[in-house]
Image (cartoon, rainbow, N blue to C red; front, side):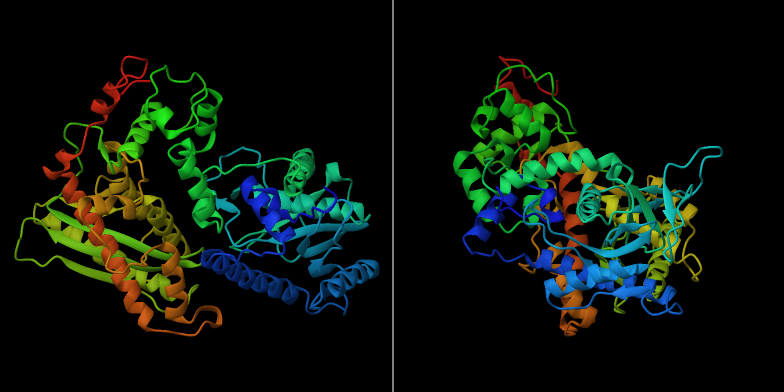
Length: 554
């Protein structure tokens, strides 16, 4: 186990991936990252450079050596420069590198080390949001979050934000703190240590108490190091991380060969099934006992049995009800938003259908900015989208027609509707947050994903690209998908120095149009007689009713 050296990234996520990565590294074989992973890495690096430039700017009038930027190419030289800066008592050490601890098995670096007392506290910069704005703090409530301005360490209770904690961020700070402690450079004993976290908004430093996580870190580190060394065996299980993992083709083949139950039931629910001896899909499909007493989670137990039966029989979708239902309207607008990571929403695509007027064309209309994100022009395109949408709604109402706008899985659209209203509130035509919230809460904003979840058991997933083909819709571009669209967008606008290829703009528009058309086709199919050709979940469950699993029951 002594040869296993872990970075903070190894402390969270799939244990089997860590085992496979470690074995490959020992054999001298490096698995390349996926395109999606590389895109995220590049975006994170660009964001970190931006934040570090801000910090340097705050201290630009201070004496030389107050802020030290470690810029050496070689790791040993970076470590030497970091240690020298600590020896001199530099206030800020940016791009700090700590010496790899071969004996304890740790490696790490910090975007910044900030002088505090007789030592340093670690600060990391991440490319996701780490706080949520509290619009109306509760009077008299004592804030649990502390934040500090970017220019220094001045922690104060913050009633305007709540912490969006991620285990990976906390584990990374805990690892850096442990390494600083080993060097005698930590600003306080580990059980009292603090760390700093700067997120995508880069508007504050979130204060993270690291003493609370020290024990969890130590236990996690010891287990993960044993896995990396091959002392603890792991096996594949399908988890959410699999979607972007370079090992997934190998793991999927193994799981399919074993007909592993995790292919249809994930997370804690899969472990509950394994604990009662249900380890294959076939065993779950034939299950006739009572629902496990420990069953938890959003997925109903009888849905997992139905999904297993579908997997065995290659059934793509199953009805929950005799007649599926979805909200319809006289005037229908399908909406699909395209965003790039956390930088912003560059396109709002729409498809209008007037069911009362066959002569009116079913028209696709996008509202888009091709200025590289982040950009104020995003506010202009959002304002135009909102003005058009509300004008169509108002016209329908004035004509005595019902109106509904549809999206697929409203979480993303709602986030950017609200976020755009907040960020561009000072721009002409941008709606107030109150107006946006009222629209989202109304019956005129319909989530087709929720209709799918209410009406069907979906053994192969509920994503639009999984479900719409069952309704007869197919995308024109065989490569269409969220990951691919990120690459297309980077090329379309020449993002972060990428070679600009404006032909990708047309590809993105076609992809967005297909997404809104897919939502329309799916909605109309749910409302048609064709959907009645699907089997009923109750009929499939009735085959097992001699045991304890009853249709629709727990």
